[in-house]
Image (cartoon, rainbow, N blue to C red):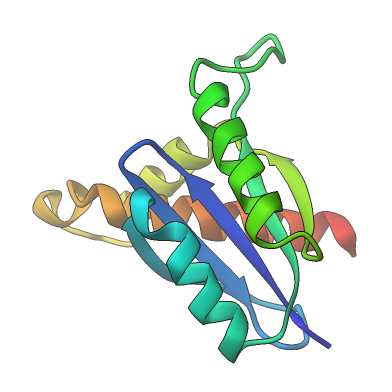
Length: 137
């Protein structure tokens, strides 16, 4: 089997998570500057077998797209241009950042560690991916 990779794309930072080869467990991979996402993915895809990429779809409580949707749509257009054969799915990302922050609290991270926004993005991407895996079962 191949891996599934999830992307929590943001204006400044992008959190990335990935499954194992058997698509059982989601693990945080990294957080990178959003300007570096395409070169990062090119390198990662050349080394790892990835079959699907999940990209978070930010929505408001009423289900309408959030204000960051426009930024993500530009990234998706660029993604399709660079990786036309890669399967891509959109996944509702409502509450993933809040869940990531709560996870940090629950795991006992100190306040200074919880202020690491990059870690929040990576955990959010992991939650997005694990929810997808749970739903897929």
